[in-house]
Length: 311
Length: 298
Image (cartoon, rainbow over all chains, first blue to last red; front, side, top):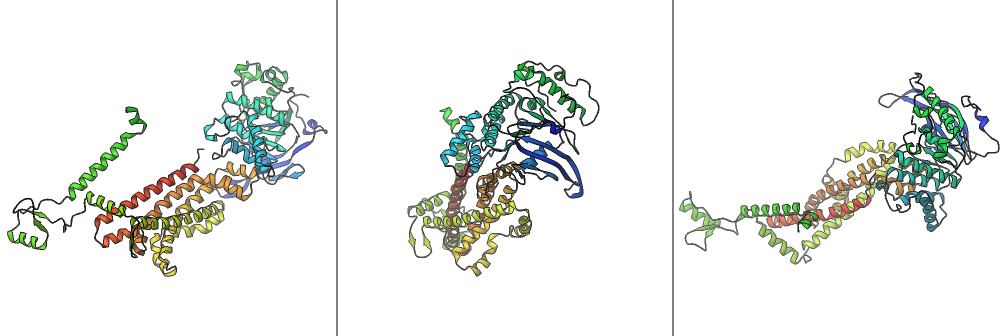
């Protein structure tokens, strides 16, 4: 299929895949507030009629400019926020409140600073498995701590750790309860570029080990391509819409080296960048090409962090 | 030697000690009974003063007078206070009749009143604060009452408490309770309502019941604010317990201050005041340890 062609959502659906989460015609309106916080009675629409399926075991990302409401959509999926129209269906039930079946990895990590790393993961295991013995809970916790490379830091408080280490705890906490869908809200935005690559690899390992279903919101196009099976593109808000979902047909397990050498990478990357540039806020047609990496997509691996395109 | 000096930060400590010695010297110097200066006084006046006992003949030199140390209205010097401290602590747990109890007993009475009132107020204050902090509606309902009750000095309640409760010991406890209630309520409510949204979101993701929510997220999250409330309450309670004990006459160190004043034993008053200072210092360092235990770095 041509990369420029709008792909109707049903085309990418294959009937043999099991549905993990259905985003069913979701619209979100926010009340317009006056300067002192009173409602004016008007509303403005962040996004409307967003409709797609998330299948079991897939990694799907959402990319779009700031203000398109992708984090709001994630909050609605998590149950932190309510949709104005439509709904989210997980396991045949509509989402009404947060729950262990939809764990979130937060941009701000959201670790409890008064608990050690181990206990931050352990509280989640304990919640998910109330019937387990203390020993079973500890063993399960330790397993996820080890997979995320946190061994030796169990007793440390989050304040003593770098951003990268903190988000490892956040990822361990989210994966350890084996949720139906994992929601990643710009998980690497607050982590330095060099550490980011390492944790992205660890996330991939974790995802493959657990066969988890992941929905991720991101600003980083390369991150989305590296990690995702499909990438959803949102047009600009207000009244943003789901413009298209593109497949990323790069074989797994992926390495950065393989990815950047793959023609599919170049195709997807160019496609997304063109989409984002054509949806820039001011609407002025950007110089072509706006980013040298977009037309010369074979940078060295050492140059990895520099070629990461962030919008 | 030099490294030990820096390791234990002896510089400031030595300076504190030097300052203390200097203050004691000034105190001592300004309260020492001096020679009587007869210049400008007639013989009649001097004779009258001697008959009144204001001055006595100097035993060391003929024809000279000194001020009578027994009748001197001057302030007691540090040596007198040291004597008093030694006297009191040489037999701290004596009991002679209803009023004359040793300083050990008096400290224990005060500590008991303080501990009961302060702990009860802390528990009630934290619970009330959590409820107010969690519910915007409850906050708006109770806030006017809190604003009116907060500025009332706890001692102002004493006549009403004596009229209703009557028992002196209970009144003292209630005064301490009222003194230490409001700061804890206000700070806890503030801390709870300002817990980072993220932590509450994690609690709801993990589907905590209200008990786990309270003990795993809300209380630890609000702990720094709660502790600062407890500190303000602590000082407020120490401030309130002195006039309460003075007025009630139910024993205790505050009562002792007033008794010594009634006896015109100024050294005794200074001693009792110093006992209060020492008690406050020790209790505060205990609170400090507790505060360090529950605080966290974001």
